[in-house]
Image 1 (tube, each protein chain N blue to C red):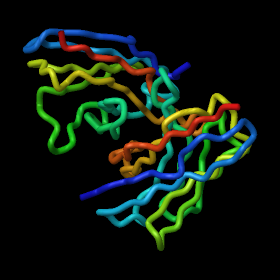
Image 2 (image 1 turned 90 degrees about the vertical axis):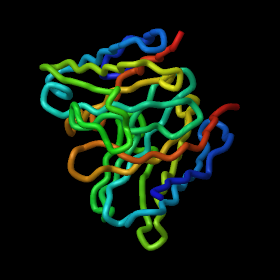
Image 3 (image 1 turned 120 degrees about the vertical axis):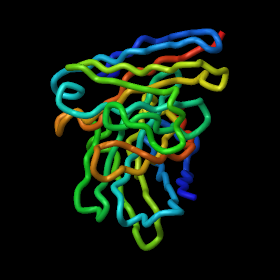
Image 4 (image 1 turned 60 degrees about the vertical axis):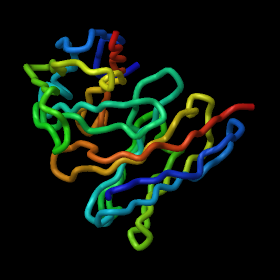
Length: 119
Length: 110
């Protein structure tokens, strides 16, 4: 079945870096754009970044622009999020999600991986 | 602060009909389809409604949604205990905002 599994979360100090990964299975990964969406404690879902199916275009929320980099390895069915200059407000559960492809929505999500930024 | 506005909570008893709203602007809901997600913390969010009022296969027809202008709403009929979850509306907010979400409505089944 279609599945997305995130990993790489953990605890890091402010200013530190972390690299998240999301392994996809059950569909042709290279056919779909992919997103990262996060949920801070006590808050709602917030879109973080998007990458086109071929990696040719990337888009970021203003809150992470210049600090986070989304990338993908279609040969390994894997999505990444490189997070640098981390701040306390980046503390959240990070979900990867598949873009449906036409209708501008996410149709499959992973359970998420937790990132905690604290001194 | 979320771009789309949702009431923070809603409640109902088993068997009841409950609705929840989502308000946006011409930059998002007014010119783009609305999608709804069901989320239990600690689990993967689930697509409930796409393109304003369409249900993915496997979603019961107890769930319905509509859109008018810059607002949308989700309705659940025949409320069940397993419907207790957080519900989020979302839409494409244009190249300036990207994908935008509401703050979520926590549904309690009394």
